[in-house]
Image 1: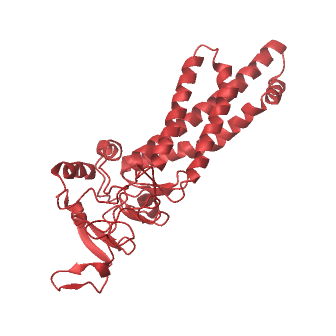
Image 2: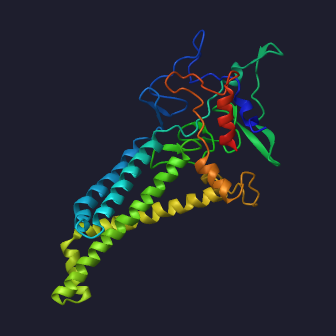
Image 3: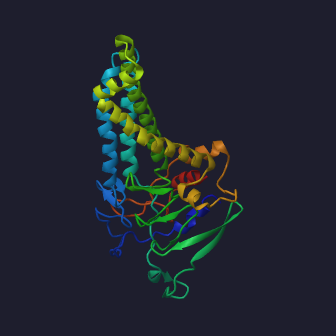
Length: 339
């Protein structure tokens, strides 16, 4: 059954680190969620403990974007396609900033914790558990053997592709990596946002670099044609006149390898249906990936499947699903997202 992976979560766990209040779950504080994750704006947003690093990334995009409009955008605005170029750059800048914020402030797929095994009541023996559950649990999925590891921090058996993040101190569903540039984990619920952000930023870097080089080339060519200077002399004069453009081009050149390379790397992960964590660990180095479903299905799985709702309400601390009373609609959405 495709819903079989949800069975381990069908009994509502205790939420947060505080004991449950009489008659219900203890409301979660405004500062922390599970582990070290942060809750903002009454639970609308969830971020990692190092969310402040996202502000630095934001500045690395905002400041060069402003400089581009001041120094380079105005140079091309009077050209034949200048207004179209300006429109495309503004669009990329806006989407890059929005996607960065959305990724940094979204729930990556945090899996709710269970109460400690010492607080689990065994109805058969009419006593509380005294021993920790077995460290591993064997599972056969799509004809492949998996060992589900028991997380002693979250007190759950982690489902396939779920990993405990040592920075956020949470188990994250389909964990990809913890990104220090956005200050949050990248997982099942925000991976497509992260991929779109990396793609937009890479395209913005390329256009910014090409336009900066284009301005230097145009000004150098004009000096060669109008004043009869040599190419070397004209280039040196142009660099002396436009040091900001040259510095901007060098900045973009230093970043373009990182952003474009990251985009290419994650494109490879998508078409092979791997996560960064799995690829670095060599989880499928033997060529046997049980999640590989062909190019089209791999792309659909990563970018086009429905995003399931959160497991919990970050504002109240109560579980939304899955519970015994989970609606068939929610379970159907979960099944589609796990396909």
